[in-house]
Length: 295
Ligand code: NAP
Image 1 (tube, helix red, strand yellow):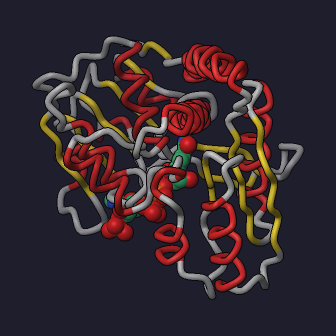
Image 2 (image 1 turned 180 degrees about the vertical axis):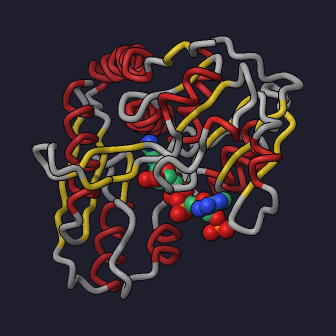
């Protein structure tokens, strides 16, 4: 078997077109959806992520406000900025690029964001709403994975979905969303404490890799005909590449593509969907603001 390669870029462009249309509908009311993007420090990967997000916002005719803070910025200073942005009616969403320098508590920072502006979906209120199935912002990467599965009409009802990774931003929310009634998968979560990992991943009709380990998922760990979604983005040294590295997923792509029925490439799979779902959350935040609707 040779897998269908899931074109995350093309699907993300469809989502972004729809977002642009929704943003345009707010224009006559003088509302331009606006995201405040805060980056603390100069981590090159984080810098490239925020640049890509800001570019995508501009393409959707939405606004962004750029806050680039020194790595030495104190937690109080960052919290004060978030307080000002919470109160600013021109700003509909606030994104603090993670990870933060170790002297700043990510938990305190995330919790300081007004849940109505929590377009990353990381605030405990957003997480609670997600778990309870109430309206609220869904975290972008897990939401993007669901959209990919839906767009490709990959059967999820009754399917066994194996999620490799249990982080708060990917693995845990993804496992939760996959078990929702409208998706209806049976979910297993794996992590570093999992025994006999290959014997579990091999059961996955849907296998989602979000471990952050280049090439961890080899063909022998994959069920024939599975849908393999690779969330991992790992920089591996490559002296032949212009930047001295190349991006690699958690999946050993070539051999796994021979065995799976669907597969996402890295780059070009899940990554573009993350940005598209962020834009969708920003326009949603602006629509709620325009309609005076609570979070
Ligand atoms: P993370 O916080 O480091 O979590 C990784 C998870 O994988 C942990 O739960 C860890 O288990 C588990 N894990 C690591 N090695 C494992 C192994 N050998 N066997 C079994 N489980 C293992 O990472 P994250 O933030 O969730 O991100 C995961 C990957 O996705 C990274 O490569 C990241 O760059 C990428 N990512 C991509 C996007 C995108 O838009 N494409 C967005 C977000 C993240 P323990 O809990 O036991 O430590």
